[in-house]
Image: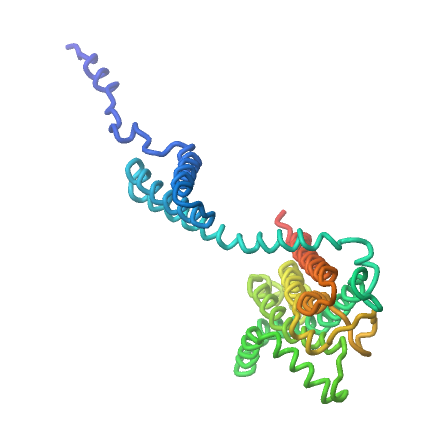
Length: 361
């Protein structure tokens, strides 16, 4: 008896062919998005050139027409889900660009206006005895650094210890009250902090007292809640297993906090502290009412008025002398220097976070 295996082999080799839909890749080409955007810009620009060109209308019209056209093309080729995804991507991108436009505009304006007096004299001389051209902001830069330094010395220990208490020890009504007041202090207007410092030093040193240290106290009121919140969030993300392992070895709680919890979160804590300093260094209202303005250099924060960059820039722009141009140039340059200081502090925060971050390998 013989078995015919030819038909069996033929049937075994004949595999079912995939459906035609799987053989077709229903996807827009890679050039569809940039090409469609360029074509839309050309069409909208041509139409507006006929009726009267407006840059704002050109940008809005291009974005709307491109979003509608991309959605229609994607719906016809790729289906509804992909079309909705592309539409949402366009909307989110437009929202991001809309939010970035004011920032870019401010940076370009300050750089172009402030570069005129970005010279050696601006960083090496004060405004004492200067009327009109010349002079600089050396006294204001020094005052800003001194006042902010004292504010940091007061705020960092208080904020750090408060956060440690709330995370590691805080229970009951006292912790709830502290959390409530920290939340309230986070939303306090800066002018209120300045008025608080003026009232405090008026009661202590008498009416009309204007001191650099008073500005430090006002800035510390604004800085403490930021430090507390940043440190508290960093301490909360430390795994409880690390604490339990230290407790299992008989390590006291205070030593566990010092040797395990804080070192693990030191990168985020340092970054949050640096950002808190950057947040208060540009405050104008509390320093204007608590410190005042001085045209001379003063290194003593406990004796007399001090100049600061925000107040120097504001008064130079708001109440210029005659001629106006030198005062306005100094105001723009002071704003540029302040932005550079804040940018350096933000870069320093990123560097600290990278250096002190726990090593994964």
